[in-house]
Length: 202
Length: 153
Image (cartoon, rainbow over all chains, first blue to last red; front, top):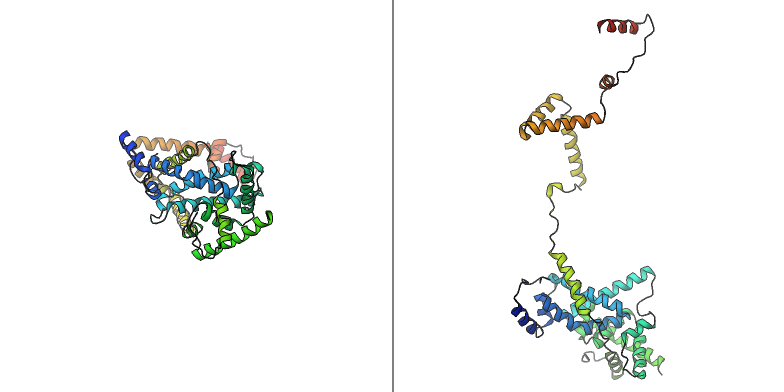
């Protein structure tokens, strides 16, 4: 694979040196280098967080995998449009969430089961931790169930801020809304979650 | 967890946030990175492929006015060739341009095409088919003409 930012041909020692330094670079620097080694480090960094976010947003592990791959493919394809002043994390997350929205729209049009309402297999895939206690698994199932009671927008802001660890500013950037909107949406979502979790577990 | 940037979030709401934060991070499937890189690689390979070079004068004419002009140009060019002297001059010009041999071959080809479509005039048709003329009524002007023609032949 050729990088989109620099010539690809490198000697083996250069590649080894680069692989060592790649892990120290910021996400943006890695992405702008655009060679295979840098992208490998980048995908590795995000496979836990972004894949996890997609699993929780979609409730479907295999769909999350597809969307994860597609998000990176689109990011690389649109590398020339990447704003260097923007954080890569919020950019790639925004791409991934747009893909989720497309998927939701497609399912609605095709009359398929909406996201998050799959069978127990899909639900289990998100929290597939056999060593966890039954109590912990119950708690996870409750919180996940409550999350899917929220609207798509509410679910996104809650997961971006608390699960993904984005600041409200970053979350607002991902969702392409003003900071004030992000704040009020988060507040509203948490209030609803409080009600949902309380009604399920008095 | 992200710091509480929103003072409206009281402890109760923040505790719900902490429950979200504590959701498990699912284990990514084996080989996710490799598969993702393979997908990217395919895409980047596609980008390397040069697009087909478009030849300007072979592009389709899409503008309605341009279509009209092109049609008029074609009609006027073909109409010019209806004049046999002008067509002859065009033929000679082409002969000088392409060489005698190529022009002859082209002429043979055109002749074959024209003959395969059949003669174009009634006279030519008669020459090819040699139809038997109906005999005119005896004593009529037509019968007289036929007799004179047969005497002449």
